[in-house]
Image (cartoon, rainbow, N blue to C red; front, side):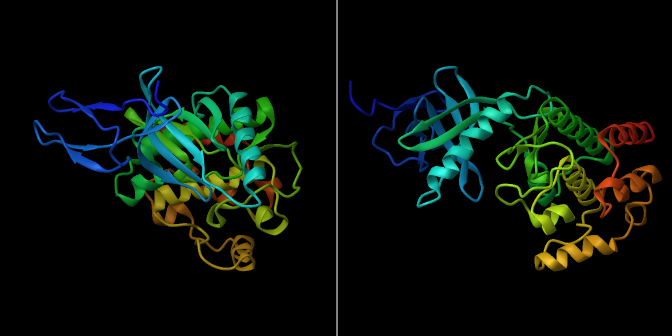
Length: 310
């Protein structure tokens, strides 16, 4: 048996089978029978990587086919080298162990994790509608009622993760909220997540996105579950208003001061047609002081009450 077995693909239009073993992965060729443009996959363990669908600081996410189970998946591969590669690889696989402990319909499930030729990778469910940040950029966000249902599902997932396993996500933002058909929502990208008790503000590993970070994360480097509530508040505000409450540019000290001053316009001034209770909730979630932010029970109660008014 050869080291690289023959690779054949099937034209999605006419069904012609093509031997593409010698072609460069991810290049596009025309079917010789019907002319349909076809992208050449890349063999990766038992998976056929079809295209890049996302990039992180040290990762690449591919849409792929699981050849053993015959289903489409997402494969997240660590793309790091140098002195930090070993530490990043260990943390990468710890993400899989952490998420494997969480079983919730609002959390992206992990199907497999392994290392291939020194490259750690995770395999997750493929969410065909992409993420909320990409939908926003394309001008395709759903109406407020659907958005609130999505946010409520993510809040439930965060509450479950924290209550069942003391897990804090540390990177809640629209690009980590993934969607499948009919707006089924899942929270993904737990690579910065860790396990910590309430009140533990010790520094987190890695760094999230400053625009969504809580003031305590900016100042002390660490946060507990109340930091996730702050980031979720930023996410709600941005998705419903189209603006970030504290902006996304500037030095850390400047971003921290904007949070301390809380000088953003209330959501009700930008979207007066939405329930006033929703505006009050978001303002409370964005409070500078963690102890004044509402817990998940209150967040979910208000979200569900507002859904009844839309």
